Length: 109
Length: 132
Image (cartoon, rainbow over all chains, first blue to last red; front, side, top):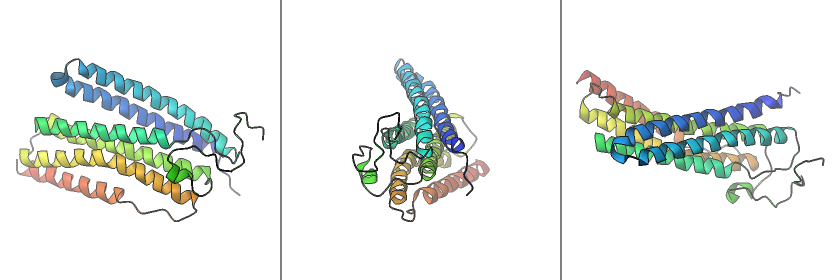
């Protein structure tokens, strides 16, 4: 049997969460910048909210790393709250970003 | 056994994870398959963000592309960016469910949809560039 080192799997997954967090942070900055002329102070709220979400995603990365290590260490039962909710929230946020982008395109185009 | 998190590793129900539709069926899959499914979902989220950025950039950067075609391409890209994350999440859930049931992975409209939409947007921009 060729067993892959379990750490690599957990690490890859954590890194995927981290770069998604970076993408969300960058997206929030751009959104805030483009919304600034129309939204005024609300733009700062957008950027701040994006920063909070990015921190939460980084935290999820660490949490998923630990959960993955445990699962791969072959304690067969599941533990932790699972990944369904964070992924659903993230999908909702990304869809919302898409809608805001649509709003921008329609108002400038 | 020796689980420092106090969660009984019995494999019996009492699984409170969301969504129930996924975790109420089947058995725990190979963790590596679950993690790969999770990473694929995250890759789609980043793809969605990139699509939104592309659509916005088309309109924000004042490019020398025929305005009608440019706007159509931008709208197409941002529409994809709003739909892709939602489809990606349902795809994640469907794959996780299939993994738990030891079934073949389901098909998804996500890949073809995004590929087709991005290709059409690219052609629109190209034509818009040439006829500007």
